Structure formats: C-alpha cells, structure tokens
Length: 126
Ligand SMILES: [Zn+2]
Image (tube, rainbow, N blue to C red; front, side):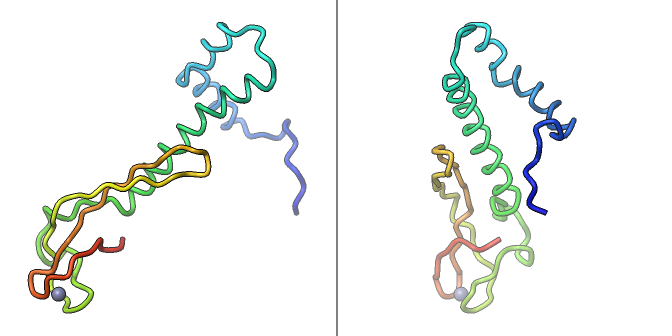
C-alpha cells in the first residue's frame, strides 16, 4: 500500500486549510504583487512561510507536553528528585533553541528544578 497519492485525492480538509492559510500567511496578497512569479519563486515563497508555520506548530506541540510549568503546583504534583525522591524546587525557566529541518529555530522553555535535600539540579522529563 505505497501508492502515491494523486493530487486529485487530496482531502477536502486540506484544500480548506490551504485556502485559509493562503490569506493568513499573506500568500494571496504576495501572488497579486508577483503576477509573473516563476514556479521556483512561488515554491520558495511558500517554503519560507510554511517553514515558519512548521516551526511554530512543532513548538506549540512540544510545549503542550513538555513545557509544563510545575513551579506553582503543590509539592506532591511536582517532579521528584531522581536520586532521593524529594519534590523538586523550581529554579526558574530556561530557554533552549532547537533547529528544525525546515531551517527555523524552535524555542523550548522548561522549568529547571533543584532538589532541596541533595542539591541536584536538572530538567525533569515530561
Ligand atoms: Zn534529591
């Protein structure tokens, strides 16, 4: 079942998303301003927009699972020290930038924690 999808079979939902994005991303306007754009120019313009969107989408999805700020949570709901099991103390957020394959950087913010008992500091997983 590796048959390539024919363009005609592209889902109606995808067409609606494309139509919406065309306006939101300013591509409809761009096309009006570049009525003689070549295939390559159109492709480049779309790639630039999509890569940014792609990076934002990845960032949002990653943050949904990992970017949880647990610093305001009750002790029992906080991540535990991997060494002694005590609830961690939040030590503020730290930001990392990760490069995506689309060439855009994705910002990740995670809460850094230290153990009040043994002093170990780390980014809790999850
Ligand atoms: Zn500890």
